[in-house]
Image 1 (cartoon, rainbow, N blue to C red):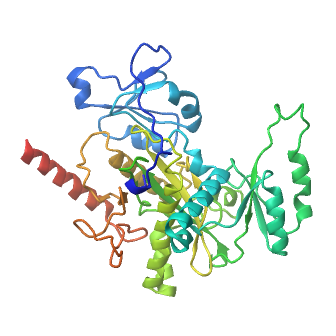
Image 2: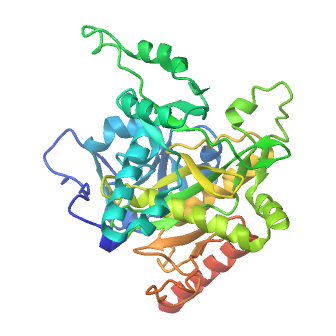
Image 3: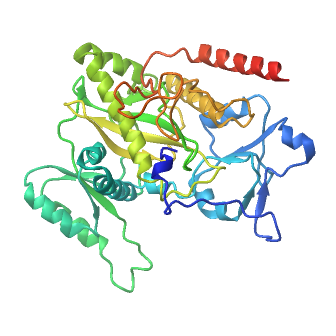
Amino acid sequence: MVPSRALLGPGTTAIRCPKKSQNQNYKGHGLSKGKEREQRASIRFKTTLVNTLMDVLRHRPGWVEVKDEGEWDFYWCDVSWLRENFDHTYMEEHVRISHFRNHYELTRKNYMVKNLKRFRKQLEREEGKLEAAKCDFFPKTFEMPCEYHLFVEEFRKNPGITWIMKPVARSQGKGIFLFRRLKDIMDWRKDTRSSDDQKDDIPVENYVAQRYIENPYLIGGRKFDLRVYVLVMSMFAECLLWSGHRRQYVHLTNVAVQKTSPDYHPKKGCKWMLQRFRQYLASKHGPEVVETLFRDMDNIFVKSLQSVQKVIISDKHCFELYGYDILIDQDLKPWLLEVNASPSLTASSQEDYELKTCLLEDTLHVVDMEGRLTGKEKRVGGFDLMWNDGPVSREEGVPDLSGMGNFVTNTHLGCVNDRKKQLRQLFYSLQVQKKASS
């Protein structure tokens, strides 16, 4: 997705489709039935998610739902299915599924930090401290309990600051707590220990201890974070990264937690459109400052994905819609909190439903099961292509990357975009090209 050819090394692995062969353990999908299947007159889809996604898939022209064990061409699967079935499933060339095999290298909190730290050291060794500093977008973090002693050493260097404990594999704010004294986590540490005869039966839940960002930017006295959806089409050298969909939300505190509040309004919710957020910041700080902030966010997407490019198993059948959670501090510096492999696609309001419908429709446009795109598109609906074997420029033609002086990445996150008009023009021009070539 994000990596370039120069970054691709011997550590990169790729799953090749097993041969259809004699192995009876493989379940085949997308199996061709002569010319009819090659032309893909209909797309057979499957999903177990009953939310906005199901509505979008069912309303997509030419797509037919498949249930139970039927053969499918497109499967928006959950991660448990992937874990149990991916290695035993044969897929034809055109088949697509919605996760990379080991997506957790980026989406589990401890693995994400481990990969980012390793990548930062690599950049410092190979390209110098200035380039490595571009990875300084995550707070100081330690995995617990295995890095407990390193954490204690750091804790004692900076007495009085606040730390946050997060379970590595939970979401929606579950299991999180703050602390300022070591004794506050002593009980937790004791609870994670088990006797030798128990440890096989009761696995220790790992946490990360992370320095708490105590100077968050506030809107109306409220803390917030940004949810940005980033679509990854490949982790091979010719990787494709589509930057955050332009219709995004700013969460005024964690939605899953906020919904439990007695004054929560289900219709109004607690979200801002990202476009409104960008306008708000520009009115207070000026457009140049805001442009720098959003460029720093683009850097987070690219560098975080480069950090896992050598470890994520890329497969041409896989794509991933990641949900990035980003916090802005009072200095307008963006911090990466976490990356979600299964961001919620359940709508919390009518406005949320419309946003997620557009997001999913455009995701399917980019995945392009119908085979309509040429591969040269820089924008599809609300998505902008920001990485294609290297950074993509807003300007046409081949950009000069030697000095990167006037180079502007092809992202317009939070900018005004007439999505419907853009899609009409795109598909009309594709239709005209197809007729002209036939």
